[in-house]
Image (cartoon, rainbow, N blue to C red):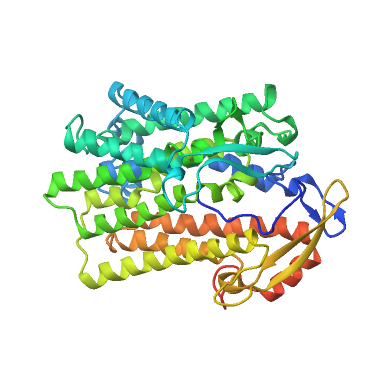
Length: 475
């Protein structure tokens, strides 16, 4: 439920989403003001079944060795009952609760109490105090960007404690995986409930709140755009990046350690999953300042979708490949491993370079070179809610001339590489690629609906110049 998204399509200077020459509904910015029947049904479906999906995948690995259909077959044929499966599920334990409380507290302290120092000595890294995008209410939030620092400190302490001082086994996360799931759910629901109450009674910025008459939609999609406590603790940035994404690489390392413990070796498939996903995580933290301009921060309100999603969905379903390889160690042939590595690296290259091209184009206002030439762009105008006319440019050169969301194409290639590293023995590890395809296609459609409302006929000119969304010549 959380994925890196692309920055807004334009160089926006106004807090309103508009069409050419006239202001439009604020519903085009962020989540909706009103809920149609389909949206409400989707929200209720996710609230009811997303936790069940997570439990089902983790339970299938724990009790059925990752055979995705085996629990359903057992129940359908009478070989097992739901009560039997639930009875075999490890409950929350005192140890898991202590570990999880320590983990979250430590990440909060790293986020709020330790100003970034990496930007002072790491060339090219942008950290420290940075400004976010203008909100619909006209506010500009400041953020302490220190995710890379938190990741480095956390992993240094992990290696020191697990491998040098033997304070805890490196398999500690895997060994407590299901009890930790219940702890993550408790936090996810607690923070989601808190921010909803906060949105009603003491919002950070009342003008950036959105309400509907439906409790479930408000709870799911959030009320506040940027809920905060104090000056620096921003719920959205913290939960999007910490604790879930910092934990991602630690979880994979714990899975690799468990594979070593069980089989006496770490397979090349496990190494590939660890390396490729670590590249993705490090890219996220290296570009955390850039992330402030993405759809997640600029448009998504903070509710259960992000609160519970970042606590539970992300760490438990984004790591399925590593978990699967604990139960089914796969040693790939040299050709297969090389192909997976190249696909993953190519996907990352496209993802990163596409985002770099757009960022460079914005920072220089088009006075730059893309693929050795002057970039081409569609000139756009829009009118903000205060009646002022503004100008923007939509890039149609480089990767952005191939497809309107070509960075997502690279992201999907990387996602497929993680899954292919697991071989073809089971369906379970391929869930991630399917999920990411659905998520990113939905993001494409959502972003383009907003841009069409904002730019009107100029958007039609842009889509005529770049007719494909993700795959040139296909879609």
